[in-house]
Structures are given as structure tokens and as C-alpha cells.
Image 1 (cartoon, rainbow, N blue to C red):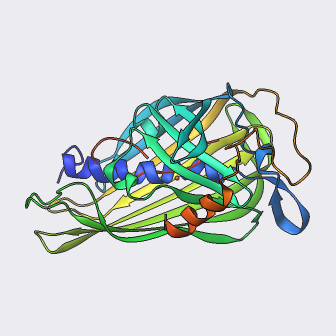
Image 2: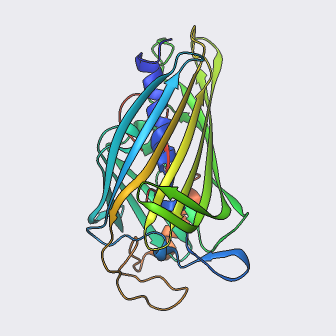
Length: 310
């Protein structure tokens, strides 16, 4: 099946969205004692008006057939809104992963960051949100499962038998450590490096066949700046008659504008007015996180991921 056909595009889009949704969560925190990543707001500035400009490139194709594309993306914190009774922070991206404009919604409480989805989003993603994308405190070399959901409606009929396919999705994340990194915006020391992995199995009802999808994203976050770079690889096994597809995506920070942060409540305690504002419903949020297993995009393709982009 050609990568230009609807079935392939649906799968790629879904994967991209889910992985891209990881970027904001990946927002690291200032290194604390014994490898503990603390002060998440320092690495994930979310003041309204913050702006990041990225340049990116994509290479994709089945086996030897490779197409190189360049794109740009600008991300801005535009405000807050109510979703499912909670106050979430809105990030607007003009072209994340070269998928077109989208808004993403996140909320932070004392135990981590929760992703509330995107607009536009896929039908598949809407079955997964809200889900936790980062846990506090983060520790180097530590990992946790982001989601593990089975028998979901994939929202698309890939083998054209009149029935939407079912899918299983599992994701996890790990804090790898700190290192220096150079991007067009400059060289940054002690960037926190994170990795998120997603695995999908899509069951083709008419063909009685399983399609495998894997997505790995590595992202670097800098104190006082946010996300400075991510690299992502998406691998899709053959759908029908094609040879499978491998897609590599990268975005690097070109420039940024960060507003003065709001006063902190104290070391180790995030401000309730900053990142994904807290309110009286935290106990309810924890129940939602525990009840839901599962870095969003629109279009008809595999869920993308995005470590929570900034």
C-alpha cells in the first residue's frame, strides 16, 4: 500500500499525535538530590505568551524509497480553558511534526502532568484521554508506563471490509540523564534527556492480520527554556502489499521568547498559577489518572507522540 493512501496516513497521524503529546509532559525539572529531577516548572515554562520557534525535517519511505521534507513550527502558550471540570493550559502549535496546526491541553497537579487531548484530534485519541504523561518527582534512569489499553476502536477501516479495526496501544517513558546539546538557538549545558516509546498492534478484521507500529521519541529540555530538540522514529510493518514504512522526524529550537515566571510557592512546590494550574479537584484527577490507562493530531493515519513539547 502506498504511503499516500488513506490507510497509511491514518496510522501515521495517530502515532504522531500520541507521541507528540508526550513532549510537554517530558518537561524535566531542575536536578535535585541524588539524580532526582525537581522543579518541573523551571524546565517547562508555561506563562501565557511564551513562544518557541523550531525548524524540522522528515525523511520517510518504504525501504530504499526516501523522501526528505523540511518544515517549521511555532509553539505558543495561549491561555487556559475548562475541560472535564478541570483548568488546563493551552499550547498552540502551527505545524508540529509537519502535521498542521493544533492545540494541545495539559494539566499539572502535585503528582505529575496529565494530557487532556488536542484539537483537532483523532477518534482513537479521544478514547485515551485524559492520561498521565509524567510523574513527580522524576528520577534519572527511572521509567513508568504511560498507558496500556487494549481492544480500542481504531476509528478507520484499513482493509476495507466495512468494519473499523481494533487496536492495542502501550507506552512508557524514561528519564535518561543530563548532557550538553547544541541547536540553532545555541549550546545548552545540562539539558535533561528523556525518551518515550509507544507500541501499537492493529488487528485487520477482514484479512485476519496484525499490523505492528513502533514509535520512539527522544527529547531534550533546558532549564528556563523548555524543549530544545526532539528526534522521533516511526516504524510501520506492511499493511497489505506494501513493504512497510520508516519515518524519522526532528525539530530543533531556533529562537524563543520566555515571559518572566510567576513567583514560586517555594522550592519543590509548583505555583498554582503556573503550569497546568492546580485547583480543588486534585483528588478527582488522581482517580481519573488511575482509571485511564494511557506524546494528538487530526487526519486519517497512526497516532503520533510528542513528549509534551515545551
